[in-house]
Length: 426
Image 1 (cartoon, helix red, strand yellow):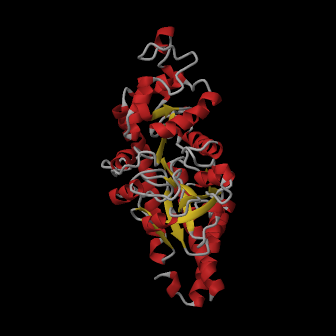
Image 2 (cartoon, rainbow, N blue to C red; image 1 turned 60 degrees about the horizontal axis):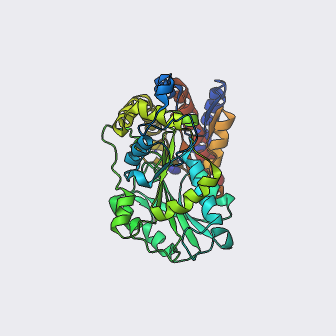
């Protein structure tokens, strides 16, 4: 029986039972932060042998003979460029390998276009007073943070089961002040959606009014499958080249959730026209990134195939955590009509929708009980979820025992907030 079918007397009795359960579960004294998608200690341990790879001067030479201990190679060492090119499904000449953070490279790219036009004859974005950016939502809060920092008006674009609402995107890009769109195309953050072939082709076929419109293609979870047969994503660069729009996309990826988040390897890829402008900034910003770390990653994986094999070990660690989350939702919440969610086949999150108007209350109740979740609304531009409904669950870091307790707390809080809302609306 769903809560919406309860009588007022039944709701009051249920509220009292849930409040008693909540008081008891608070006594567990749990202190668990699940606000970000953080790899677990077991996952980090998978890459520890990488730290023992380089021992001598002879180990520090790239395949072209370059001494990786020294300055130079702004684009990154050739073997790492090849491996990251395979990851992004582009050619190595399109690739620049950076430091540990793809987010850093995204920020730098926006900063570059703010000050230097990416298309000759266009104004730098800082001179466009009403500049706008499209933000598929729910989406990645740090993307929104970047465009918010640079003063863009952020326009939400609803997500569908196959990707962003492309009818709306195609309409919005007719405005020349719209300069770009954020995309997490495979196992999107937080929905776990993989863009369909049709959606990718429609992106590639866009004809924006702004010649300097760019698709920020953050393929953060491109090999983060939770099943043996992961989703397949159509390569955006090939699709754009085929459509005659090779300058539209700028691609990003990293090994942050593959090896070590604090010392992984990030990379970006773009057309020669885009890269000419971007590298002109980087050549003043740095002489080169950590080539020893690039070399360490190449030696550890051997190739992109080795990286994919490594991810099977990650899957063995985290897939049971995702199953636990979805099992608790199914067994403790689904029958009450208070939640809906996507079953992700990869990525790092489970995105749930609780009763409208209760997400903030659920998050606050969980925090008081010792479980810190991502702030309600964070997955929308400006932190404003119009329905106060979406909550992002990040299950990777806790142990299974901790996660089990955390999900018990989450389920009680979700039911309690829903009952309170029904009583207040009655």
